[in-house]
Each structure stands twice: as structure tokens, then as C-alpha cells.
Length: 112
Image (tube, rainbow, N blue to C red):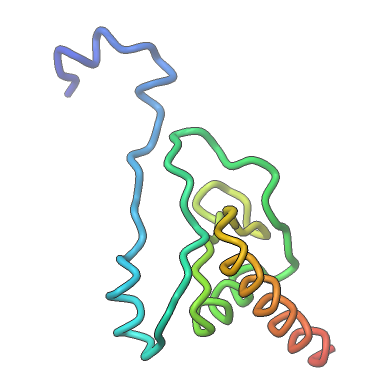
């Protein structure tokens, strides 16, 4: 059933999915038993993501980064199964991301 405002909206507007926010950082830290998490996953836009990072196993890399306290966003919900959204943070946050990503990717390379 449509509402009165829907009859006024442009067709593409009706196709935009509602924003699904992630968990608050504090809740995630409590759940994972980590501290000083950095959130590099946000893009407050209804538009699809730009070209961000593609990996063969982005879901696994996402999980491992999360356990290291680096929050990025998997993009499977956008139909991009191999992609992660990584936003620009402070210089310190970016350095932590690069260090953590190197650690995770080295672990993956070691597995073969």
C-alpha cells in the first residue's frame, strides 16, 4: 500500500533502501573484548559506494580486522561480495588500518 507522499516521489527515490547503521563502537568493544577501536566504515550517503577495496575473501578480512579493533564495512549488501568500504580517518587511524590490514593479509598469504 502506498502513502500520499509516495505518489509525489520520483521513482528512483522509492527504490533507495533505508540506511542500516552498524553497532555503536562502545557496544562492539564490549562484545569483542577490545579497546580503542577505530571506525573507518561510514559513508552517510544513499548512493552506492565508490571503488573502495576488493579482496578475494573480504568477509574473512572484515572479521579479522574487526577483532583487531578496526571497523570497516563489508559490501555484500550492495552486491559487491569481494569489496570492503574503508573511509579516510585521522593519520593515526589510517596508520592503524594499514598496519592491521598488512597483518591480516600476511596471515592469509601464509595459508596459501
